[in-house]
Image (cartoon, rainbow, N blue to C red; front, side, top):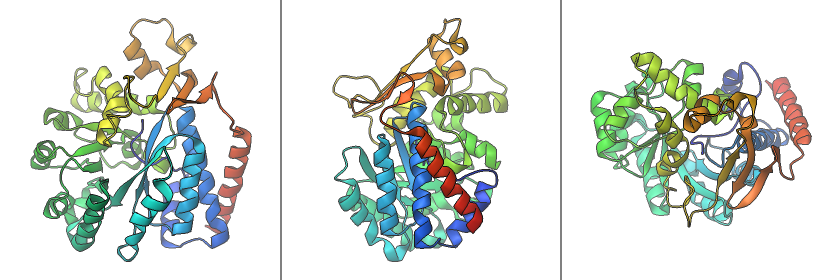
Length: 354
């Protein structure tokens, strides 16, 4: 299970390209190219053993969102579409949920926001929408130090959104008081260590959050990660805290990080009653690992070897909602070569346009 979006932009300098695309909307005939990346990244996540993703989606036109959601659904994984919209288009959030997501058995919705005191009215509006729809609010919070200037935690508390219905992504530059409040109000957090390392934004205070009882999951963070390898994410989450604190016993421990990657992620997005563990009555999202490989030998500590030795190549079978999606190491009914060709062509068009 991966909290955060699976999208990926092509090649080095992708962050700069993403910035240009956000400020200059591409012509209609180029938009389907973005969907190729969504489909590619979703399949890559599934291939790596990820059964559920939360996709934080920037404001896009309704018709583009329709194709986007179809690309996620066609991949066959379980997904949460966290839709961000401009204030003037906030009515689209409900329309997207009811018309595009509710009919799909593997889809659900969240409302995505970037909080701050400067956008308090807009934040309140989207919080009310989320509450009215009965879905979680998904917020990027204090990923960078400069975010402190707009006091996002204060803004979330001011509008009444700081509670169990809130998922905070990154949450790196929290004060001690904010860490305590996060635990006291049962706010959930998504830790994206590889993205934070690549963008040099800092390290989440995960041990302190854990001491205050904060529920945490793991995330890819899409184009700022460049991999759907959750084994890599687990290793990074453990290694960053050990290096920072010079303590091999610091949280997350090996069992704890495996829980973050499974049941912990389900708890963060309000799905622990359906997925996240092999429990009778849940939805049969199952990942089967092949330990008879060079990287697993010699077999001794299963949990440690999954976290430190595991690779996507060890994922032999994946079931989502009881349906076989990967068998004997290959995605089922997916023309992988075609998916790659289409994504490469779309990437070439984007590079030309940029």
